[in-house]
Amino acid sequence: MTILREVSISKVEMLIRKPVKEVFEAFIDPSLTTKFWFTKSSGKLEVGKRIRWDWEMYGISTELDVIELKQNNRIFIKFEDDTTVEWIFTPHDEETFVTIVNAGFKGSSNEIVKQVIDSTGGFTIVLCGLKALLEHNIILNLVSDRFPDAHV
Image: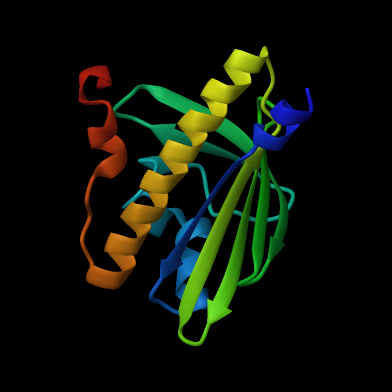
């Protein structure tokens, strides 16, 4: 079981060549986030607020609670399935190193490993989409194009 605990989190990281203020804002302001991740949100991330995110092309949504926001430094949310996501924003001069950690997966060993793999791939796509948007003003539609046969 020790090995499973070591692999039961998803962690992805990426350097975004923009100031931390811009990168942080892209994750809390749905007018920006909808350009590289989900398609609709019930509002901006604020501590103590329950938010709904929708991926309209797939006909799915999720609710989350905003647990912590430390301006330009950290975001911590908890999804309705009790998994958590933490974003850490580390400034590097005028650039930002983003770390995303997704934890709290439940199920059998095989189910947890599958969830970690799915999360790692998903958050990697999110960071790549953000990088293209902020650095080059390009909307890549990565999330939408990930599962084209699943569109409703």
